[in-house]
Length: 203
Image 1 (tube, rainbow, N blue to C red):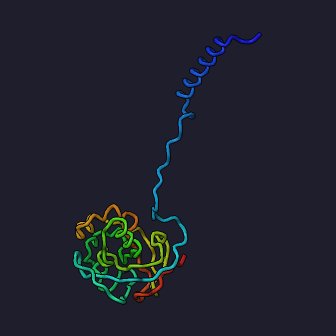
Image 2 (image 1 turned 180 degrees about the horizontal axis):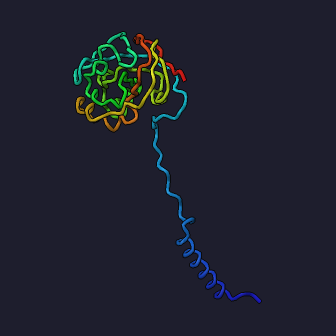
Image 3 (image 1 turned 180 degrees about the vertical axis):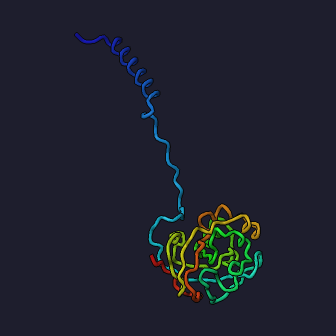
């Protein structure tokens, strides 16, 4: 005997409502929360940083004073760049012994990206970093030894932008330069750093 259409429809409706109630109370049935995607995040990945060149060198004798460019400079192990404010203890953050500031580096590509994407144009010396490089991913050098010319260095941490830098520049660089403002490094050997010198990872 065939089932009554009305009875079958009622059963189907009750089954559907029970299924809906079951889905609502079962956590596993909830759709997963989408994971945010961040494009072009430059944080270190542990990959090959490539090889680079020194494009510019800047130092200054005192905090808040303009940086001036040089073609070649002496690097002093355990101290810094000859005549620079952090080598003489005259830097804005010199009183903080927890962070090595023997030498700071920044990628020329990031300075160009700041202009292209944020409309903020900076000359290399305005970043307050000592060495401007091209062709090497500096974020990948944190915790690694590398060589600038004849000078052996060790990357210690990212040189993140700070309010002091933003106040000096008078431009909103904090947000666009997060993870993009360069590298702090310890100088391990005496030597010379010059424009055009190669920057290569050692380990």
